[in-house]
Amino acid sequence: MTSTHTDLLELSDYAWQRLAHRMTGLSDEEYFWEPVADCLTVRRTADGSYRSDGPQGPNESFRFTTLAWRLAHIAGFLREERNGPWLGQPVPESAAAHAGDPGSAAEALAALETSYGVWRTVMAGTTDDSLAAPIGEHAGPYGAASRRSFALHVLDELIHHGAEAALLRDLYRAR
Image (tube, rainbow, N blue to C red):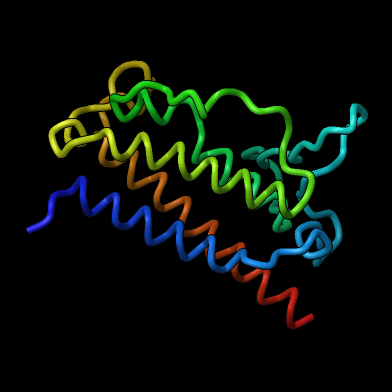
């Protein structure tokens, strides 16, 4: 019988490999494609860097997102500085603040690879016992939740946003 820790690592790796495979060959045109008007995306800023339009607020009506927005979002949550502490691990050096969001498909794929490495490092440091422990008061209202539930939340995000990114690729090809 495998451990929870092993199961979570295997699910992480499977979801990551599936996403990485589906993003192979991504072009800049496809990365920035806006299938409908008024998409959330990644845009060039006045200083020449790129920034995501950010998450939608709770009172905003739904806005469609581009592959650029989706991939920036995935890279962002995989490398979040809270991941280490919320899973009882230090913040990996490679999780350090980044300057902007990916401004090209190649940069997005590299950011995803780096971000998955950060997530994988954090997850690899956990154990069944540490995953069963509460996150702790540094997580505010989520402090009583188990670290395992937080790991599952991150994996749910990876799986569902990865599937949305794959669907956008399918729609781009079929347009």
